[in-house]
Length: 517
Image (cartoon, rainbow, N blue to C red; front, side):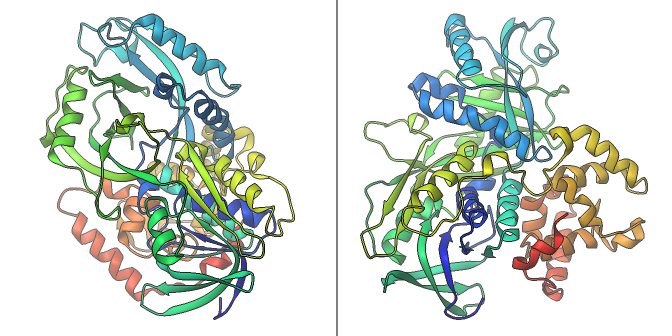
């Protein structure tokens, strides 16, 4: 990219919506520039509960259209990336004092039938005294229900969308901020700033504002525009503990305040618990769990499990700010819609501006498709919608069956430790062979920075997936950081940061197409 380069579309925001829009637009023949002021998925899109779901509880708020749209997307996404997304069964213990059984059965019937299912099993009632999921629960819980949704590695989902966009011709610039953009001569003239303070000017036929929590700020500060919609910032926090149960089901717990809490098997050794809904008015880039949230999540879990937890049992926490579509009359943050609105500012003779308000990770692909459809009326889109049947990078696994693929990959590389082979298969899918780069022994993978993390993988993450420091690697491109032994995290982080400091990028991210296959 050079000074004055021109693109059909400038996408601002490297979360799931921005990456999805960039991918869709690049695949339709547009020249695309995606800019993200920090790392990809560095905020909201790596801080979700990591579910591909319709949102069972939204039925209570009569959000039937949103739930149906999300349910339709579940299996589309599961087929697109079976290495980072997979079906998950959820157990809902029945608490008669909270919701009657008939209401739950009716909700689950709707959930099963609002959209077509092929990969996901339907719901059913269970006897907790006989089902394995009943064993960890207090004895007073004797019945419950089981239904299906999906799990996703949210941060990797963002990276794979950006990578696909890149391989279809888009340019992706992380740690690059949009300072300002003005309309002139039927196009946008934008000023960008890199992490080192240097600036570059580009032109664009249109802008897609997918800045998430910053959507309104970007409109006002960088674009000098107003908007008909706005977002409400709601903090969602999660805690991670050592594994609280041995089976592979997740739990959905009802609380007396009518909120729900999930307890989900996580990273083999842990349980992920969340989320909270707290009004937030601070800087979206600086957000953390507080003592009240930690206590709330522990108390919510302790109503159901025999084994009680305290804040001292928490191994890790993360928080994110959800930019929810602002609505009149929605005082309770939990009741604020998770749907989205696309606002197109396209006056005749002026360069168009599309802004994204709200949304949820499950509907990102549909949102991106609708966004580019809206832009098609004002920018030269050469092709129609295409992402519904297209796999994401690494997702071209035969019949979307992960386990046979993982077994085959491990068999082809018997010298890889079993846990490393499985992590590679999960994280990279069919691209895992590219990560290895033809290596035939552990020695050829180079230095081992942490258990199972070798230099060759660092090079791949640096040159192909835009990783620039230890946090990008340990907490977003993977969750290796969670598995580090106490007392080693600082040393591992410092060693990886030092490696990045002395190892410049050998291949521009925009040239990642060379890594396809």
